[in-house]
Image 1 (cartoon, rainbow over the protein chains, first blue to last red):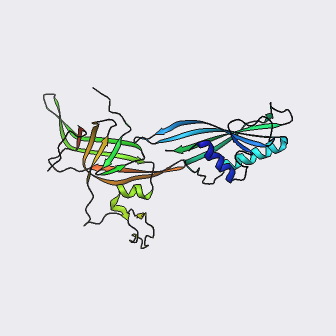
Image 2: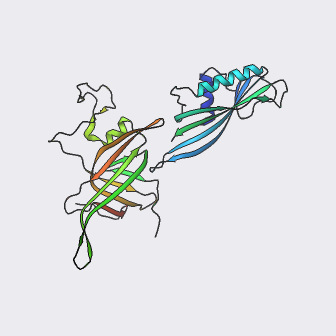
Image 3: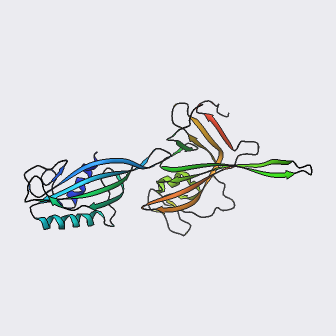
Length: 129
Length: 168
C-alpha cells in the first residue's frame, strides 16, 4: 500500500497514461519518453489526531508533466488541475480519501532537454486512517 | 504522579467506540450559597451530574447503531414514517421515545493507553444525539452521554484497569 501507487492508479483510470510507460513514480527517465508524468510523494502530516488515535492526514504529491509541445503542457496541466479540483467523490483504492486539491505552478524549460517544457502540479491529499 | 495519556479507548458497556474526534467529559455539582447575618458565606452542594459529549468522525449507520440502540431499525423493520428498511446495515430513525420505552444504560469508560491504564467512568449512562454537523467535507455526529446512577451511587469514578472487583 503506497499513496503514490494509488494515485498513479487513479491517473491510469483517468486515461492519462500507463504506469511504467508514460507515468513514473519518482524521477522521470532523462531521455525518453518525451511526453510523460512523474509522481513524487511526501507527507503524512497529521491534521486532526482523534481522541481514539485515528488521524486525518495530509499527503503532498508533486506531479510533473513534460512534453516537446509547450502548449500541450499548458493544456494538459490545466485539464489535470480541473480533474483533481472537481466536485467528484474521488476515492483512492487503499486510503479513505477526504479531499483532493491541486495547485499548478508555472511551466519551465526542461533542464534535461532544452526543447522540452516541464510543468508541476502540487496535489494535496487529505486522508483518514 | 503520572500523566494520563491517550489515545484513549472509549467503551459504552462492552461496545468499543472508535473514530472519536473529541471526547469532552463534564462533571457538574450544583451548589447554593447562603449568607449569614454575621457576614459569612456558606456554599452547600446539591446534586451531581456527570456527562460527556463525543464527536464521532465516523457517523455511518453501523457506528451510530452501537451508540443509539433506541433509534436503530434493523433490516426488515419499519421506520416511523412507514417505510420498510431493505438493507443489512439497517437504519437510524431519530424519533422521540414513547412513554413505555426504557432507555439503555451502560457504564461509559474512557480508558487511557498503557498497561493497567486509568479509567474515568461515568456510571450508568444513557445516550442521545446532541447535534449533527457538516465540517467541510466530513459529516460529524455529536452524541451526549448522560450519567444517571442510582441514588446511592457515584456519578463519576476514577480507577486503574483490573484493580476493582466485579460486582457479584
